[in-house]
Amino acid sequence: MTTSEEPKKAPAKDPWDLPDVSGLVVGVLGGTGDQGRGLAYRLAKAGQRVIIGSRAAGRAQAAADELGLGVEGADNAECARRSDIVIVAVPWDGHAETLRSLREELAGKLVVDCVNPLGFDKQGAYALKPEEGSAAEQAAALLPGSRVTAAFHHLSAVLLSDPEIAEIDTDVMVLGEKRADTDVVQALAGRIPGMRGVFAGRLRNAHQVESMVANLISMNRRYKAHAGLRVTDV
Image 1 (cartoon, rainbow, N blue to C red):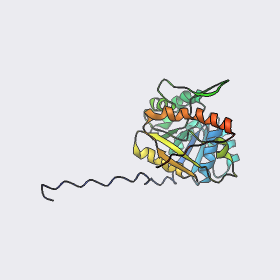
Image 2 (tube, rainbow, N blue to C red):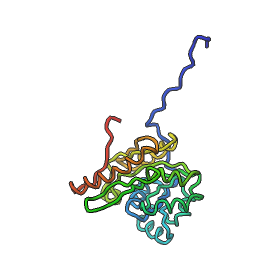
Image 3 (tube, rainbow, N blue to C red):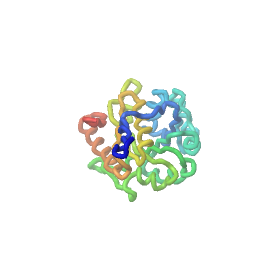
Image 4 (cartoon, helix red, strand yellow):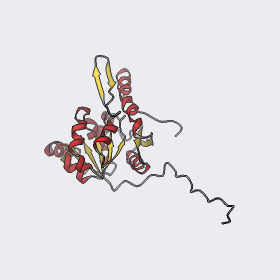
């Protein structure tokens, strides 16, 4: 190379070149609830090794036995310790307490927060705004030793749990600070037939993604549907 030649830039990474996540163990905290249980079922059906977590190990094991597909049950701490990726699907009112109690077990783990802070009144669902900005940002503040991402907010628990439905026709918006982490979560979403993981920004943008569930609930009530989202031109 002569002194006048510019060094060649590496080609841009293909955004759809995602890693193989089939060998990773996925833990689902709150896996006995509707959303967590549905995600556990779909991921296990896709061939992922899944562990359901609950405050009570017996309750988690009972839910795992009902799902079959090799799903295991454990208390939340053991679920976190044994998993490579941990999906947080606990109720919003127990979100902070659960994560605070598992800070040690979740250290070094890839955490996927899918909690939607919502309130309900006579007019329906409405978004709440946590002091940290979003549930995902609260998770990041409580888990400084973990790699926190946000995803799986807009999925219908009814569709996830229905064995008669072969594919879930929806996109999953994935947020996080590091591309390597969001790529893993996108790939995990893509393991479920019909789903696609789409990068949607950093955690500071999680509030509006979590909040949109209130809009989906309104749509579902009006149209008697199980609405999801699709991103166009991507």
